[in-house]
Length: 82
Image (cartoon, rainbow, N blue to C red; front, top):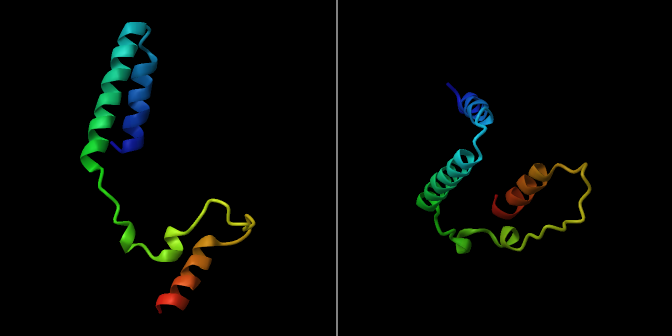
């Protein structure tokens, strides 16, 4: 069973629950599970290892939606780092 199939199956099962207190308990249980799994995986990012042009990126780029950002980044990387 794939992850998407498991999510769909779980959604169908949860959708059939009508008891509000059971849903509240289930929601708390899932939140705790997700929180625990995120805490185990959380790693401090080494910002010093990132190239300066990536660290200085901002959300506002002034680029249009028609530009291929991957291609621009690839070209910049090739020019700067060979």
